[in-house]
Image 1 (cartoon, rainbow, N blue to C red):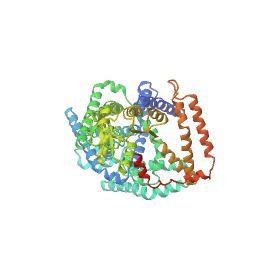
Image 2 (image 1 turned 90 degrees about the vertical axis):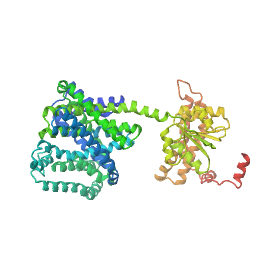
Image 3 (image 1 turned 180 degrees about the vertical axis):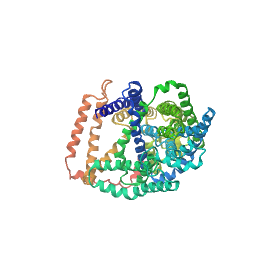
Amino acid sequence: MTAYFIQAFIYLCAAVIAVPLAKRFGLGSVLGYLMAGVVIGPIIGLVGSETNTLQHFAEFGVVMMLFLVGLELEPRMLWDMRNKLIGLGGLQIGLTTAIITAAGIYFGLSWSIALTVGLIFALSSTAIVLQTFNEKGLSKTEGGKNAFSVLLFQDIAVIPMLALIPLLALPELVEQAQAAVGQAAQQHEELSLVAGLPGWAYGIVVMLAIAAVVVGGHYLSRPLFRYVASSGLREIFTATALMLVIGIAALMSLVGLSPALGTFLAGVVLANSEFRHELESNIEPFKGLLLGLFFITVGAGIDFGVLADNIGPVLGITAGVMLVKALVLFLLALIFRIKNSDRWLFALSLAQAGEFGFVLLSYTVQNHVIPTDLAQMLSLVVALSMFLTPGLFIFFDKVIVPRFEHFENDRETDEITEKGTVIIAGIGRFGQMVNRFLRANKIDTVVLDHQISQVENLKKINVKSFYGDATQPDLLHTAGIEEATMLVIAIDNNERAVELTKYVKHTYPKVKVFARAFDRGHHFELKHAGADFIISETYHSALELGKEALISLGVHPFKAEQKKATLRELELCYKDSLFESWKKKTEDSKYSAHFRELFIELETAIAKAMKSDHFDEQARVERGWTPPPKDYEKEMNKTE
């Protein structure tokens, strides 16, 4: 028992040290786990023979990951993805397998071994790619979505591969094919429901097992989860979630199917369940720990002796496999019209071999398809390609993305053919809302933005906008700043927004500048630069949400509105004094002692005001808006 505690401590200690370090240097958690494994395994030698045993256990992290992936996919969404699944995924596996098989035959391998190697290397690492996509926020990009389609098809394709590989060991004996399929179903497990069954019986058992997962998941899971949830014990719900995943994995293993595919199918069935998010939150910690353990064991399992003896072939095969896969993926990206940096993300992210490679290599050795020494060398290729994957993501971030951003924005400014009463600089989510509101009230606007992708997206929904840097005087002149009544500044760069305000108020003092501030400090800077009206981007939405929260917690709507108005009034009362104090800031101190005192005083006044009720004359004013007097518009026109 003591030895287990020490081994567990070593693995956890390595992860705790290496992963935060890798994240701090922008390398990603996967590389951190791999490096931790290499350090405690081949380099220091703290772990050894137990690594292979642990790796089998840690592979369950992949099973859990596919269960969570399935939970994110509603059946209708999966059906909608059928073209990409079959088109992108099918072509990727077919082309990659064909090229690697041809290369293997060229270098002297038998066709069956070459085909097996081609199938193994056609698979990519779902664990690394999806985890990296999540960490870097790439899951929703076009490249990320298409890569996910390919990974999903690859995970499904493992099943026919498990059935095909034994046939490759005995290609000349057709009559043994059904027996070989039965052996494939066993997946080196001692317990099996299909061992020795004829082909037709094996098929029936497999169909029954899949039906049990689908029907049971649809009809039995809800009553079960309701029963468990009624106990109010969170740990029992966690135990139920684990029981579900482990049970399905065990059932799939007993009938010779992939546990990963079985749990993925169960996840898809439960995607519409009201308990979906609870299941996700319960399974997620186990998935993360087991996946981390899996990658540590991969790093610890690298045999530097075999690597040293075959350094040339291993490096050459690794580079060749990654190059071939990247080229095939890039070609498919061209065919399926994946554009710009997404094309590179799609090609680079899937260029490695995957965790299923270890499973299939072990399986091929057991079925006498690939010799043991060759399998060891190919395992190094799989591990090395996975080890290099974070580097490809770094290359994408540091080289590809900046180049495309530069390329996309490095084009001539649009010819501005319109002039309007209001010029809007910046058409992100804030500027878009302002533009919609003004346009709806028949106010002519000219919209400028220096992000070409943003301009193109708006053109697709018939919102006319022009590409160009609004902080450039020439562009403002072309947009008609001299004749405009107002400039709305909603650009994301705080410093440039302040500089633009200064320039416009100095050069065109009659033009009103309405600006969006990021925070209180930016608000003061814009005010100091001369902006006529400034609003902090989250101020009113936060107040409104706070008011609704009070109402939801039982406060009467009128009182909640009154408290919101009181807070706003107090903020306005202190606004000028805070601004005057802010102007006295020094280079050493952003806020002076006086500023801090005023802020504390404001907080105290707000807290005091929130405790008071005032059903007085003032309250009548707060009951609603007073309509404008008659002839209001005529008076306004006279003033103008």
